[in-house]
Image (cartoon, rainbow over all chains, first blue to last red; front, side):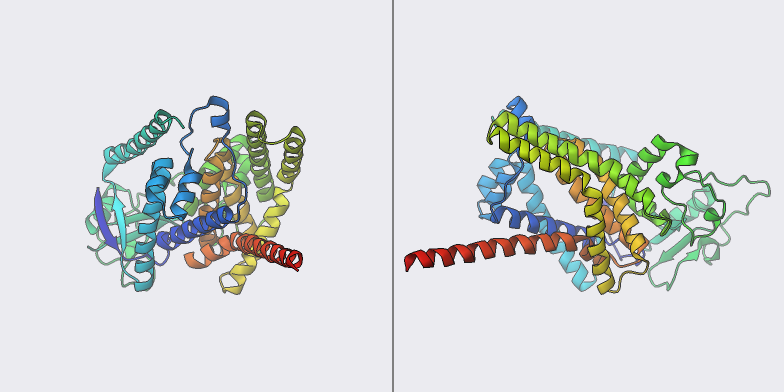
Length: 138
Length: 288
């Protein structure tokens, strides 16, 4: 794996602008939805099996994060909490490189082996997270 | 480090170093006709015209067979003229067959949105993209309604009448999704137009929105987080699509794609504000 900084190609998709916009809008819309007290969808998987699904607790985790309760947010759904926090870091980075027109950080995976290791790593992380939620008795 | 961007048929192949380009030209990975660009250049130039790579570009053999197209192309002119895109697989159903064209379009939009929208025809009618959207969005919405109704029936949080009323409303709303797409893409095109980013007609925006919004609906089959994943990827694919088809900047595409969502948030906040104000007024009346 290699980290490089590259100038933005004018014809290429600006991933920093794209994901900053999409992520901010979705988190903003989610915040408005929860603050307005609108209903949140239920989990059919949990209702049927009485076991947690991988996203169980994500809404409560986000709601706790909106209240500034970081520990409670992490306890409800570690992955959802980590993703929102990671997006916060990305948003700061993206805003800085967009405003200052700086080179963009790119992660390069060298070869098929690294690519496969990355994919299986993501699958293993999701599986471990799901096992944790079920073991926690959600 | 000196990085060179290489493209082919209107879509980017990637970013490569000087040595990778030389090796690629020798091995046949790159062609001398592939346009390339690097920092400091005003425009893209075929690799054969680069002073560094001209001698490396091998001459074409006299009887070399033409490379196979990524998708079967009904009109040969589409391959040679970069201004006439090939079209997405869905618009080549006669050559590919319905199932292959349908699955191919879903996979292309989900996995290779930049390349796919770079190939999409900008005009050519609304029926085909709307049919593609309807075939995915209506079942997707019906499945989401069934999941929600199933959850409510099992959890028994609502009365049976309320559950049935919600189910009926969800069924009717599912069949209205193509009409909703028309309204939403109209707002998106208007936003793009106001920012000076609409370089092609409304038809192009609607065609882009139909493919970008339709394909991610397959993710709604996944219970729980599926609809969320579909919404995220639908918006991202639309942004990528608009940058390719309307030739606007990523920022303009993001603002246009999110305009309906922003409007919804404003309406929700406005509704909550009005409700709170009315509640305050009523309580003041009672205080008197």
